[in-house]
Image (cartoon, rainbow, N blue to C red; front, side, top):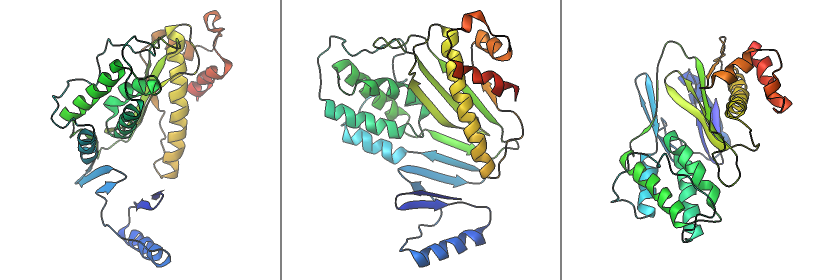
Length: 279
């Protein structure tokens, strides 16, 4: 399997002789440099040990702290204040939008291996064109959190059973500007978390149940795609993929084939979840 991004690529496989042959043939056709076993790729550091792989961005995190003069900042225990809510017109003084955009862009890429900052970064990325001191201070708090968790990353350890699991959640009416919900999901495969997402929904939902139902549809579609990808990687999932969501009413609606009167306002496309669940 070959992963290619512009002029950077890495190859993985189970047979070293086949990998060496591929590198030799590729080197005959293109001018290339063999860097050996992968330790660094697209800003991500990779440590490969016996029965485990650790992916992190310590070097990139330090570069961000240095770029925004936060090297000596005091670490924060969390990426953001849980009770804090943001809006476009918060009455605070406006600040430099260019600096804020650069910071958010850096944090978005850092969240590739630090999924614990993804939700906070997603919220702050909505205010690129109306940045206030409140938004700027919240972004700097994420940097303070990064300062104390610079060694964090994703560890994939060897396990006997590689079963795909999904986890989803959503708020209701969490955005003061558009009255839309923010939802997120992630998957675990063996020991590590991957394919994480936090986003504002395009539709306005009318209840907590609908919000949970919509995000489950999203994660189920993603699960179908991942299962197809894993089949191509010769890691076919024969068992059902379990998706966990903390809303009992949404689970009941999914399992019950009878159309509920309270779900008449749901878009028809969301009810594909019922058919997928039966499969």
